[in-house]
Image (tube, rainbow, N blue to C red):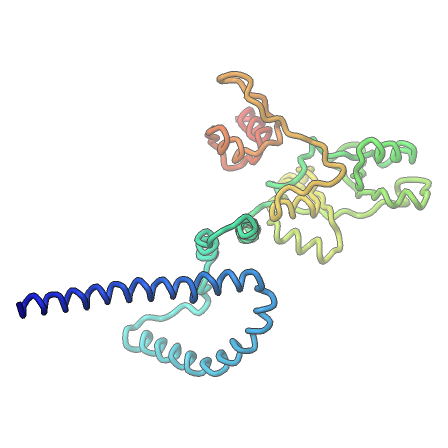
Length: 301
């Protein structure tokens, strides 16, 4: 009888412990995690302003202690374990940030922000050859054209800028802006604007910096032989970051159609990554970004 009472007491204590753990976990999740997180997300900007002085106060208090611990740990690693830390190494790498973004709980808005941050991380690795307008699609006008021809070109193309060249597209001398037409110029030379030349191997971030310094939004992309590889604008680069930017003149639609079991109709400007992802195609190339570029390179081989 005494043993039965002792067993019941032990079982009751164990059951009580389990209930306490469940209740504690429940209250911690609800009141210390879910509710504060939801409330802070709904008023994040205002709460950041209110809490930043508090966090800065504790930062100033604990910084000497934390810095002392770091120095002590560095001394122990260096002189006891003979381990030297690389001070030039970034504490958080791009892969760490990308992994952090992917682990974040995402709603539609958060997903867009995450994609934007990932695109920003990849921007320094993007070459402008990947986002330029190829030379075959450049819309330009010969330097000796009349003002009537220039006006008609602006009307038919609905472009805000037109490339100006001598004899052929490899001899680009500048560009003209449609706003200059309000000055009633007598010839193209009087409204001709200089255009910077950049190599197709330049990165997207370097081009953005160049645009900012020179206050330009268009550049002439040259290949390794000095010929015209294409034209690139600030909008083309920003589309790598924000995705396709549509304006009132963007009417081009790429053809993407499967006609039969093994028969397709594609626009040449479609990217190989898009075709690989959607149709499972495999392209053995590291130099081409679009279908037309792949066909040209494959034909030359």
